[in-house]
Length: 143
Image 1: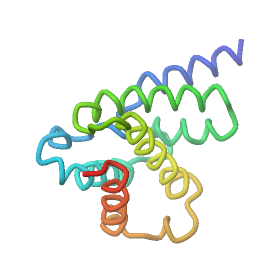
Image 2 (image 1 turned 90 degrees about the vertical axis):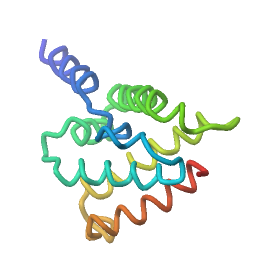
Image 3 (image 1 turned 180 degrees about the vertical axis):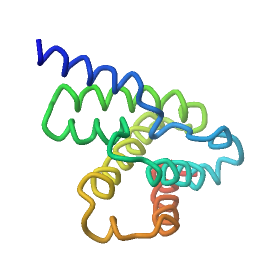
């Protein structure tokens, strides 16, 4: 019974998870394609800096580190939300691969900065993080 409750709680976290890679503000997806990486970086950092330990995305990342089922659920939810949000904006023959890289990159940053919380990444100012993310996301998205 307890395991079932845990599984149901994880399923609910995935269902309720805001689009951590998806748009956090109405303006995230509007504007020029060239500015998309900056808008994504800004929305992500703004959201994560306001997040607390109960944030569904952070909770799923913590859970995914030790639970294959949670990791798979996280990947599927991130992929679906990312493709829905960015699929129309990221074009080319390998667009789906680049959208996956976007999600993987932000999952890694979340784990390093907001879960582990040590090292240079955790010490960056939010503005510095936005600047670095915008540059790396620009490379991933090829805009």
